[in-house]
Image (cartoon, rainbow, N blue to C red):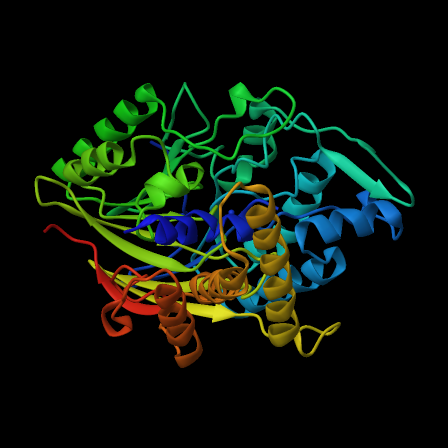
Length: 430
């Protein structure tokens, strides 16, 4: 990869994310059914209505993040209503439950989840980097924004006691990680990958698994293997790379030393983990040096296009994954195209700023072409199953020609296998 391709990968995607021994279930919860329906949502970034009011402050916040708060409330309600009708056995929420850790946002989000419990869905959450110990949680009203109360890690486990913590089989003493039982032959390993103990003036995007937490999890996996129990994992940060050179250019979206971490977890028997954080819909397969495989199923955010969530069915060692997209809401029947154009404009604005201020010696004649490539690649990646369309192939070819290089677009790959949006995965032993 020459210098210009490095610039392309460096800029890509930074534009979309920075600016989800007592049994959990009663004995008759599932009966003897062989199939478990599991839903996943992530990166909800819920901001309580009590903390916002139309005005300069809210407009500035929405412009800076590319989000529309009222619209996001409708999207979340649409997803939760759909889930009530689907009545999955399990709902996993893989972090960034709130906008920026506001206590009121946590309280309101918990209330929104309760109707799902009433239809029999068991809910499990894990915090993201925007949920716990946030030093600069804020409200946005009128012309002003001001600090509001957040929550501690102890309070997080208390508030979300009914969503995984109170009836956990085990709790990790070093983090907010826990183990829950789905049924006699299936466990859920929820890993807290956040650095909330390190926050000073703001949250940190980067993630890690503490050494003691990793050892705690490995012991659980060894025990599960002995008992022939399938373990599903969930975590906020990515465990596995989802695009070429992600480790180099976007390290904040992977846990530190991800190859070692993924390899040890895979070797111990973890075959699948559900993640968020990157605001993109992508599934990646990693094989450890010892030959053991693990899938990282990353789900897109509910705060931007394409507003995705997962509905899956687990039957034995087969997991069928289906992705649902919210394309319309009462306040915006054209949500899909409007939100896509909004993300396109936001991506272009942020990418242009990075090009202008990043010190890259880019000739004026190639700048516009590079911007359009970044925009198109980002829009394809966040939705998943990205394929190079004719326009993007032309942009890539033109950019390569400008740089005096050649590229075969037919062999140009940006998406790691397997498929991202509709696929059946085998999560048994290799």
